[in-house]
Every structure is written in structure tokens, then in C-alpha cells.
Length: 135
Image 1 (spheres, rainbow, N blue to C red):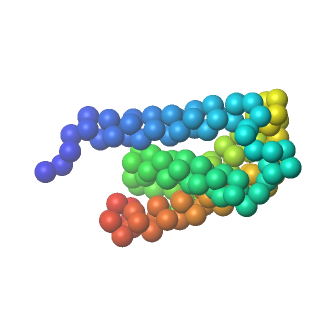
Image 2 (tube, rainbow, N blue to C red):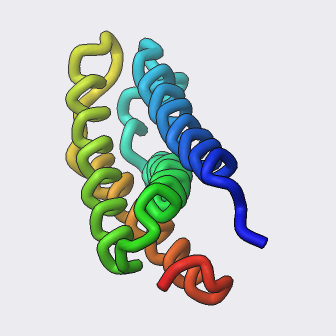
């Protein structure tokens, strides 16, 4: 028995709503003034891991939304678009932080964001293929 088009459209809309909400959360957190991290410790392995996990979450939601809204796309296309979009969002987030008092724009943070997003996109592809969700 196939699902009705309404159910499918609702699932796509919810997937994109989750992407937008998560992106808004990242932006809101980036808008907070001086983070509770001493200035000299702004870039430590721990903060870079946090960046990677934060953007891994965005990547997982984005790859799911893309796969649901474009089921004819190949896995590699979804993964590449997810990685590019996650990296672009990381760049925009760092530019935004440049204008927030007490925050800093750092290239290493974009690198951590992109690595986290890339690993999550690849993980999503592997799991999606095994579950038969993607071609």
C-alpha cells in the first residue's frame, strides 16, 4: 500500500522545517555575546569538536530533507550538496559572529563545521543505503 501524496508532502515539509529550525538555533547561539570560554581558549580541540557535532546535526537533517524532497537524486548528489550547503552555512555563521561583540570569525571553526558536516553526510549515505532509503 503506497502513502498518499499528502503524507509524503507533509513529511517533506516537516523535514525542511527541522532544517530551518536547527539553522535558526545555530544562528541564535552565535548571536549570544561573549561565550563563557576565556578569550585565549576560543579555539581548542574541545570547541572544535563542539563545532563539528553542531554542524553534523545540521548535515543529518539537511541530507534527510534533500533525500525526501528529491528521491530521484543519487546518493552522491545529495551528499555533495549537503556538504557544500553545510560548509556555506558555516562560513555565513562565522561572518555573522564577526559582527557580534565578544565573538570571533575564525577559519578553523569553518573547517571543523565542514568536517563534522561531511562526516555526518557520509554516515547518512551509508545508513540510508543499508536501509534501502536511497538508491
